[in-house]
Length: 110
Ligand code: HEC
Image (cartoon, rainbow, N blue to C red; front, side):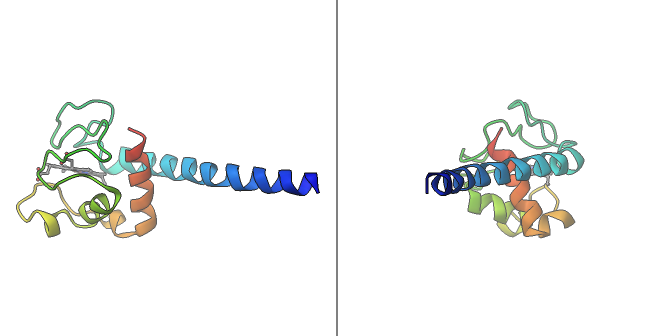
């Protein structure tokens, strides 16, 4: 009985965290390939776009409101749908919800 309980605990508490870690790692890879040219991730310093340190749930510099999870999904999927004159392009890989989620999970760690 004890062992079952313990197994249950281990499974329930470690699984979600390891899943999150993997997603953020995948997200970091995508970020380095697709986003880093225009965005710093470790500072607020602007490159072509705003520095993304602490970006999750802060007020957007681009004037699109608070960058919640839902807002980030909309933005990354199609920036122009929210801000028609934006200079941030739409990316193929960001049309895939799992990749988008991974990038957002990475943004949350900044
Ligand atoms: C060609 C350069 C470029 C690339 C590549 C790019 N962005 Fe951007 N990004 C911008 C610009 C420019 C803005 C500011 C948009 C505006 O003000 O209209 C922006 C804004 C943002 C914002 C909102 C920040 C804020 O404070 O308003 C987020 C989040 C973001 N980008 C994430 C990403 C992610 C994640 C990727 C990779 C999938 C990416 N960007 C790729 C240029 C780029």
